[in-house]
Image 1 (cartoon, rainbow, N blue to C red):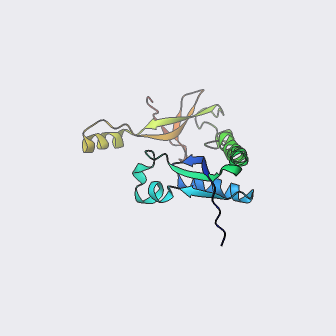
Image 2 (image 1 turned 90 degrees about the vertical axis):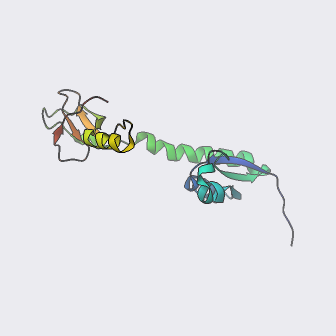
Image 3 (image 1 turned 30 degrees about the vertical axis):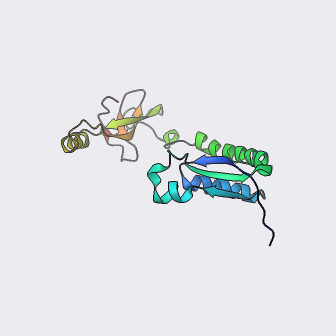
Length: 156
């Protein structure tokens, strides 16, 4: 049996194991052999060491390094583009229940009861917020996904 030995170079790293395995799949489709390093340490046994050891790494043979980097750059562009274009809420189809304006904005709404309860339990002030929608025209505010029940937005 012939033994193949290559010097390896890390071409991708992440603190999320799933990201590394998806990148490995992209390289496999291109015919580039790769190996995942530190997945057991950073991904399972001692996950709290993940940042300290540089995350979970994807390594390829030196001879494939440049082509692997090019493939991963293209792959990352493809998966990041939909995320940049993604709308957080269906704001384009919603209208304000007060003034019927479509000029809406995503905002964070303080939840006072939960904040007070968390402050009592932990002994330090803990601000708690939920995602909501605010009308830029009249200032009305409601929780995202609720039945458009108007609430006081308060301060951020």
